[in-house]
Image (tube, rainbow, N blue to C red; front, top):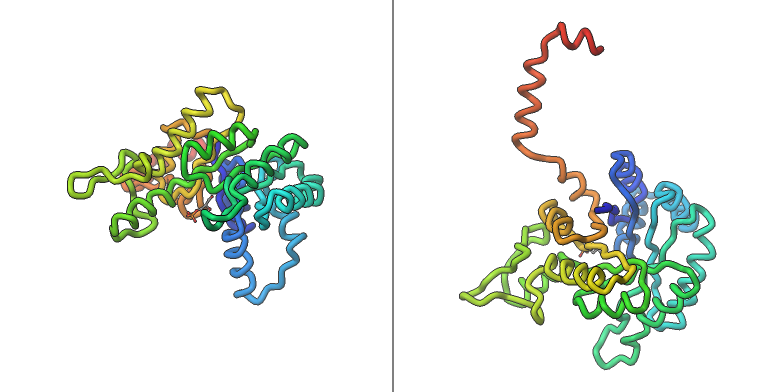
Length: 273
Ligand code: G3P
């Protein structure tokens, strides 16, 4: 499984790349806002074009998702083309993030504008990461439209299932992939029992029908969820910096290291330098 870093913070991205295990980057408007706010809080001025260029250079040759901000197909296609034309020449690693359904309310007429934008951009050779996926059927339509990547948001499904049942939780709390019961009843969102369940079903659909789309398990909140995304067969997990940083930690590893360090014999260490 490939590991992407889910961040728009170039310091975090550079550090994660220095660890040698990162295969790409996903950004979104909220992550970009967090990165910009952090710099503004330090009194730094930001040249957005130079900032994006640096982000792409750091990630080269691995892919970087840059998201559109508009909601009609026409405008998203235009933005996708602009982003790609302006930035892809820098490191040849841009893909365009398009929401699977850009409607904010059910009575809007733009439900299929995302899918339409995916289809048009992909047909022009511009790779798309179809985002904000919460159901396997959304993933199916994104795959049919030819999306290079499809991003089910695991953690946000878990949040939704818990908050719909009025369960108090912290966003980083582990949520079992097999779901949870309340008063003996398995909680679910239209048959989906957890974020990893939706990731797993998306993987099953693209695999069964041999779609080319890669499933990116997104909105991951803890290392155990990354493990479950890997076991579910996700092609990619996009992981926040803090969660990547936690993935190597284990009390017994620390304890074992201490003992091995204490036991080093000088004759051996002299030999190896
Ligand atoms: O990649 C999607 C991700 O950025 C959303 O994460 O934690 O805001 O649900 P989160």
